[in-house]
Structures are given as C-alpha cells and as structure tokens.
Length: 187
Length: 178
Image (cartoon, each protein chain N blue to C red):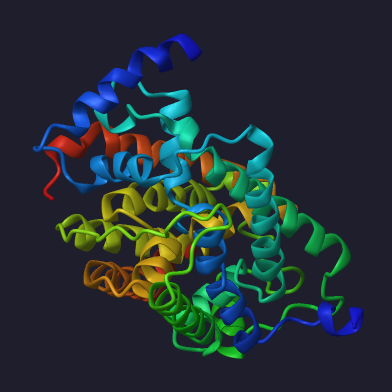
C-alpha cells in the first residue's frame, strides 16, 4: 500500500480527487474553491492602504487561509513520508532543451538550477521568480480567478466567462513557455 | 489593526448598495450575504485545513507542483496535466449537478448556493498575464504553497511577489480596461 502511494499517481486518480474538492468545500460550508483570492485577503489584512478593492471583512474569508495552510502542510508531509525515491521523469525533449541552457533535470520536482536562493540573485532567476510571481498575482486578480476558481470551480458550474478565462490561461502559457521562456533561460 | 477593521465594516455594507461596483468587488459581499448566518468559533476552520492537506498531498503525488509537468503541458509533450484538469472538471460538473438535482445541503443543513460570474475584459487580459506567470513559475496559486512545502523555500519570494502583483492590481484597477 505504502509502496503504491509512493509512486507518482496517474492523472485518472489525481484529477477526480481534485475535482472532489468542489463538492467537499460546498458541503462543509458553502465555500467556493478559489485559491488566488487568498492573495487578495493578505493584501486586505496587511496592506489595505485605503484602496477600495481591499476594504472588506477578510476575516470572514479566513477559512481559505486555513485551506492554503493545509495545502502547505499536506505537501510537506507528502514530501517527507510519501516521496517517490526514484528521480523525477522528464520528457526527453524537454531534458535536452533545458540541458542547452545549463539546467539539469536530475533531482526533485523543481529544477534546483532555477528554484534556489542563489538563482534568485541571477538575472534569469530574478525574472523567473519575481516576474513570474508578480504576473501570477496581478493576472489572477485581473481575471477574477485562477486555475481553481475559473478552470475547476467555474467550469464545474458551467460558467462561460470561466471558459474564456481558462482558454486565455492556456494561450498565455503556451506563448510564454514556447517563445518567451527560452529567451529568459538564455540569460 | 482590529480597530481599523471595525472602522472599515460600515464602508463594506455601504458599498454593497452602490450599483456602480462590479462583480469582483461585489463578489465578496455576496459571499458574505449568502454565507451561513451561524457564527462558528475559529477552530471550525480546521476542517478546511484538513481538506487543504488532502489537496496538498495530491498536488505532490501527482507532481502537479512540478515545473517540468507545466512545461510539458505547454509544449504538448505530455498528456498528464490535461488529464488531471479534464477529469477534475468532469468530476466537478457531475458533483455540482448532483448537488443541484437532489438539493443537497451543507453539513449545517443550509442550502448550497452558486453565484453567476459576469464576463468582463479582465478575463481576457488578466487570463493572458496569469498564463504567462504560470508558464514562468510552473505553478498556479495553489501549487505555489505546495512548492514551499516541498522545501523550496525560495518560492516564498514568489508568493510575496504574487501578493505585490495583486496589490498593484487593486491599486490600478480603476484605470484598467474591464
């Protein structure tokens, strides 16, 4: 059993389990799956600065902060006790491309050459981590949701604005990964 | 901090009556209106912590938090992420249909309510920008927190930058096309 849990789970197990988060949160207390809203709650709690967008009772949304705290803890437990002992498998095409930029795919789920404190102080690491993070925060709020709020919760309730948002996520990601990211990784 | 919050409360109720406010601003008010009239002590939120933990474990075990899986998705090198998101949506659609069909209530016996999302141009511009950030960081907001849990502590900086991005949006939103 533990052996089975330690292998990477296939999509047809993980996907339906993630989908069940939608009814789980609804049944537990009418909560709507949407993680990027937490970034707004942090702004409302810590830096409202008189901006009307951040003037609301964020404490009523505290459940969502507990929820992301749980994601952090669950990820920590799974990496500690359910970690896959084998190295991560990466598509050979991607491995070859990354090798050209001096990025090794050996090791964990994230490339250490990009996701480390020393990388943060290199130009490409700075653009990737600070720039990428900024776009995630700005873009999700501008779009009114992220992969959980639009792609999963929005599509589950058959809302066409969420379908538009999801298609735009994919177009933005497709263009960036194929045409912009290679330029950044060359730096 | 707490005194400034109390001061803000009348502003919130006052602004919900203002028709000029759009969905993003109203959404939190409507959630508040429809939310339970019952007030629970803080430890009731621990059930959401438990739900989050299950999701965090799935995020790691299905390697959704992996930068490589996201790159493979956008380069059409792997079906994995399409399978995960697609089957999650199908499960969600069926669950929501069952909840509506059988009028299933919450564990507190309250009816479950859904809010329609309104279309605005933000879903296009914001969607493209978020997609770009997703491709760079290899994470959407949920997996960001899971990435820190794997021990990649530098991702805390990515989260802080995302908070800064959200704040900048709040600061500029009156001047942005919607």
